[in-house]
Length: 176
Ligand SMILES: Cc1cc2nc3c(=O)[nH]c(=O)nc-3n(C[C@H](O)[C@H](O)[C@H](O)COP(=O)(O)O)c2cc1C
Image (cartoon, rainbow, N blue to C red; front, top):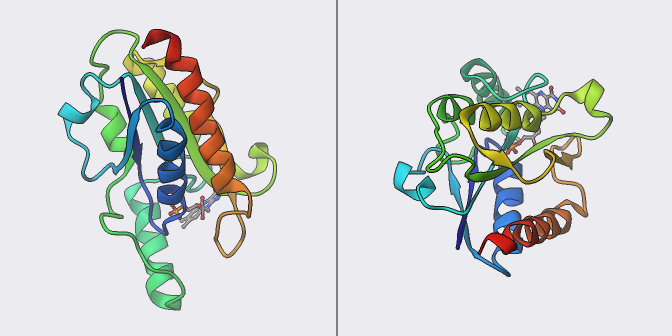
């Protein structure tokens, strides 16, 4: 049984969450996190659980324009380093993604600002919709991990991500 966590990240928060989710999954199944820029169709084929995560930009998944804004802010302020492959987005990748088998299992997460999702928006909602419409079966409600205004992950979010990964593994365990 293999699980794959595919992420998009500009400032590194979503990558850190993806790695923590893979760590949690890894207690029960073979799991790894990979950037959307580097994932191959063969990685998705045959995996028992696909987890997809991205940053919330303008209330939803990023677009080329919002990624450009994020890079411009980082360059102008010099306050943040940009991840390798930060120009790749999950929105376009999801648009061409199809399950390996009907009902292949999946889950969605995002990173976003603190506060009610009604105010901040959350990319995970759109990710979940696209996964479901493509024919995946979601094993969990979409999950959000919160960043401060820095933006850095809140103090407990990495541990929460690891535990979420463990809980996902428990949900797919009967299928092993
Ligand atoms: C261009 C841009 C737009 C954003 N829009 C939102 C938003 O609408 N809602 C929100 O909660 N956070 C928003 N954020 C904050 C990001 O979701 C947050 O910093 C996220 O953790 C970044 O993930 P990353 O470090 O993996 O790039 C925005 C950030 C950027 C750069």
